[in-house]
Amino acid sequence: MSESTRRDFIQGTAALSVLSAAVLPLAAAAESTKMNSAFDYQHSPVALPFDAKALKGISEKLIQSHWENNYSGAVKALNLVRGRLTQALGDQNTPPYVYNGLKREQLFRTGSVVLHELYFANLGGDGKASADLRTRIGGAFGSFDAWESEFRKIAQGLGGGSGWVILGYNEQLKVLENYWMADHATAPAWTRPLLVLDMYEHAYQMDYGAAAAKYIDAFFANINWESVAKRA
Image 1: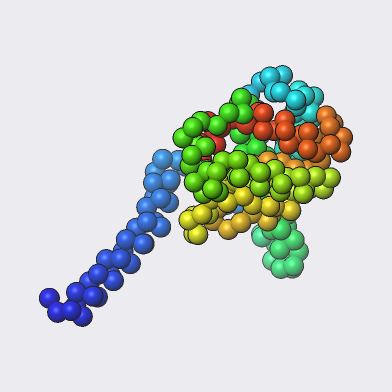
Image 2 (image 1 turned 135 degrees about the vertical axis):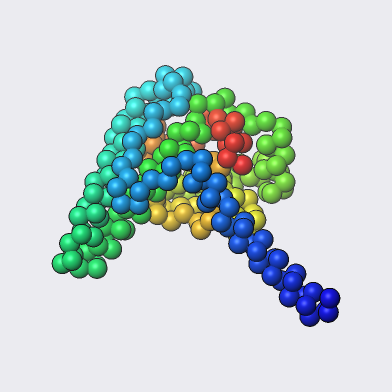
C-alpha cells in the first residue's frame, strides 16, 4: 500500500468513526425508547422525587407552590405553545415573524420545564457528596471546595433577580464548569447538566424573603448527590 493510499484509508476510517459516534446514539435511543412527535407531543408533569416534608430548610409549602405554580405552569404553557405552533404551521397566512415568536416561547418554556425537572431531581438528599464524586469534581477545579466556592458565588450574584446556576460537562470542549444562566434559554451549547440550582425568587422568597444566601445554604444541605453522579 502506497503512503498516499494508506493516508486516504486512515482518513476515511476516521471519518466513519466520527459518523458512527454521531449516529449510533440516535439509533440506540430510537430502539430503546419511542421518539415523541416534534409537533404533537404533549408533556406531563413529573412528580416530586422526594417527600416535600423531608427537606431541611425548605418548607413543604414553598416546594408545593414551586412545583404546582411555576413548574406545572411551565408544562401547561409549553403544551399550549406546541398546539399553537401546529395550528400556525397549518395556516399558510401565518407570517414567519409570528411563527418565530411562538418558537421563541417554545424554547423558553422547554428550558423552564427541563431545568425545573433537573432541579427537583437533584434535591431530597443529605447534601453529602461521595469521596469519589468529590475527587472527580475537585480534579476539574483544583479542589471540591474551590468548585463549591465558585458555584456559591455565581448563585449569590443572581440573588434578588432571576436565573440558574449549573455545574455542567461541555461535551465539545471536554471541560467540567460552573455556568451562569440569566434565564431558561441561555444554556451553554452541548453541555450536560449535572447539578442545577434555581435562583429565581420564586424558589426561595416564601421562606427567606430577600435572604438568598440562606436559601443557597439550604440547597446545599439537600443536594441528592446520587442523582448528580448518575448524570456524570
